[in-house]
Image (tube, rainbow, N blue to C red):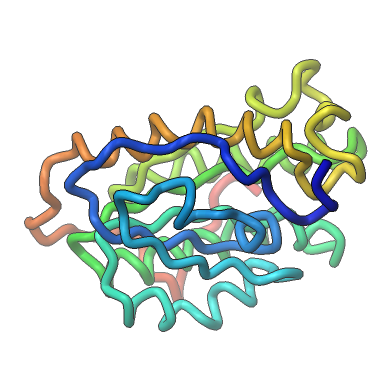
Length: 212
């Protein structure tokens, strides 16, 4: 049995693809990942940081940009809830992260993962955040992976088998996550090259209000 905040040692491997360099960015859930072991056919960079909120990740995006990766995999937002950040704040900051990455890395594939479920008291806020992120991701050519049905069988809270504290993942939690994440990363490889310039829908300094 592993200690809380670490990840299982042998969850499996991903076959070689043309997506060579992958950055995994987020909070402690990402930080605990054994990415080099799980994806040995890729050059992986673990930019997870314990306690990070969306604002923290936004402030260190240069770390991702400097690596010029083939793909970026994002999981961020759960710690904002403990700081009582509003749904709008979380959504706007993640949108800004996506816009900034797309402008700086126009050819990089981006996979945005939903905020994972926690206790039932957070369900409404997390589901609202995820609904907005699902709608926004395609506008910056980012793929979206919904982890809610993966980790919550009743749709209200993370299953106890997947988390001992309704925040960090257990061995089983990482296994379930990776079972969904592997095919999502495989799908990134199937995407056509992103070579054409795109017109972003909004300027991240001046965002219109949408449905909040």
